[in-house]
Image (cartoon, rainbow, N blue to C red):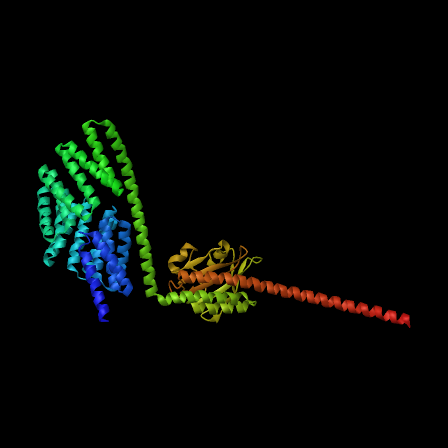
Amino acid sequence: MAEAIAVNNTIDQSNLDAWLIVRTDPAKALAMAEANLAESEKTEYNKGIAWAYGNMGAAHTWLGNYEKALEYCFKGVELLRECGEQKQEVQIHYNLSIVFYMLGDPDKQLQYAFESLHLARKINDRAGEANGLNGVGTVHYMTGKNEDAIKYLTEGLAIAEEVGDKNVLGKIYDGLGQSHFHLKNYQKALEFKNKSLDVVNELGIKQIQSYAHDGLGEIYTMLEDYSKALEHFPTSLELRTAMGFRKGIGDTNLHIASTYTIAGDNLAALKYYKEALKIAEELNSNELAYKAHQGLSELYEKMGNLALFVEHFKAYHEAKQKHTSEVESKKIKAFELKGKLEQIQKEKEILEAKNEELQTYFEDVKTLSKIGNELTSTLDLNDIFTIVYERINTLMHTSGVFVGLCNYDRNKLEVKLAIQNGVRDSYFEYDLKDINKIPSLSVAKGMEIHINDYDKEISKYITGREIVFQATMSSVVVLPMIVKDKVIGVLYVESNKKSAYSKHHFNLLKSFASYIAIAIENARLYENMEEIVKDRTTALERSYKKYRNTQSHWSGADINAEF
């Protein structure tokens, strides 16, 4: 026991260590998480498994493997919830918002940022709440809603300062700097970006350091202080290279190229655009490619090299179109994966919450098969109806049941078999031409009718109100009984309870209607056969008597002649 606890404690510490370096060294974090997963699965340590999946999802996010990131994050969220590790669940919800940012889906990005925020508030996780507000603010400044972004980020800033969470503080300062940059409040942007840098330099968080330096480079470019800009961009490149963050390296190369273009140094700009294009080709990134081709086409046009301008201009449009298709494809894959995992979760919840109901369902299916055999082997109509009523009542609530049979010669639906609240009802009938009655309507159109709230839904079928057994009926099912494409009658079931018949009940009743139709047809064939047998027997008896009489007559004549 003590040994198992020690192993679990080691796994917990390793998972925590992996989580702390997931942004700065995602490759190492991934290797640690995979090792922790294998060890946890050996000992069936669920908390270790849950954390490992979450860490793997986060690591794949920063390594650019977004489909794997989604798969592991969704699995991690589910398992963390089961283990009661809600604080880490908050973090993985936040990471999902980052994945959807990378996939270019701001709606989903905002959804998961809010999910992280709401869960943090629910469990009173103040640091998680600050982080969630940062996530929500990030989506807002990315989609041009900078004033709203500043509102959320400022609220998050107050909480981060209160709890002393410098990690979140560094991100929020960076976000506020970005929001003010978009609003062209460059001095404010500088102030917040530098505050972010002070915090993350102290913590050594390379990911946020790289964004801060890259952002400062862009701000100084807009302030036309190109030398300052070109101090910060190389630092961002160095940090991103150390992390292996190739897409980030490509982005910074584009920003450097743009700065050199604005500063008028075309040759330096060419060098960095080409470097960005090289990385785009290595990563097979159409987004980086179209931005690099766009920059190169504009630069060559400016330099008067029309041949290369046309070449890169065409490549720009081709790559941009591919990128647009790629983004849509990724969104669809993400949606499908999310839907699949959500469906699994829903099914699991249903199994847990409604185990008894599902068990009943499977039992009902087995019972129905037995009932079908029982019905189709019964040849008396009254016996058939007794079986129907008793079996339906064991499977669902009913106030009244009847089986009506079509007499097309009389144009009537004849109801000889009806029971209300356990008491056999007297004969009644419907005019088959009166389709303002739902049993007749069902026959005329071969229509299956399923009503959960009679007063609200009856107008979809007929005008006015129709009372069959009692005025308080709420749920009604009417099903045509069909043999060889001909409606031979209907099964009618009602209840005074609303929504008494689920989809499952409706399907059971449809099976009943089919079995009853077969049973009635068999009974009719049997009755006809009995009549035929009786007629044949009578005819044979007559023939036999006649034959005997004839034989007697001829036998007597021969004897007289012989003697």
